[in-house]
Length: 207
Image 1 (cartoon, one colour):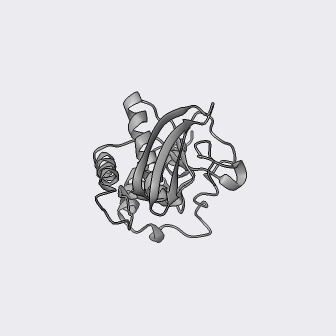
Image 2 (cartoon, one colour):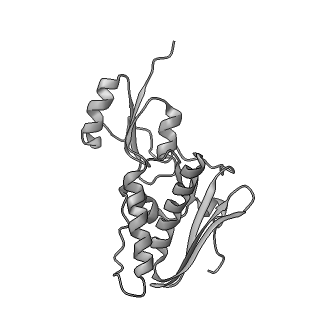
């Protein structure tokens, strides 16, 4: 009989302790520099989760964080998000598209004096909030490493200064950060591999 394992995710979509590889994989797939490891008992896992991950991780014994979890196959039953910004800062738009049929699910903007990273961040949160409302754990694809990191930290870590012109945008940022602080989600946030798959389906095609 196979022994149960406990999977500690120190760095992933939602850090924590998981009781199956499938749950763990959904938290680390596509997440840059994900840190995770399995333990034979719940007690060991809980102790390790409280400690520095590098006390338990090493190159020889640990699975390569993203390499082992990443998939070369696109998950068709998923939602892809992207942003477009004409300038830095500039007019900003973002949207969400179903990967299976390229159907647009939401579209926001244009918003004045924004940046692409802000748009990517807001798009992911918009997708998560919508999917939670619908009761769906559909994966969300983004091609923005920065935005995925910001989601993990529940903070839009932009250096853009607020002004009268972009006040509506910053109001959206505040709402998005509040949503992340007050809501949990099970949706895997996956990195869209542009080099392998081409442009993300939500791309605005303005490059």
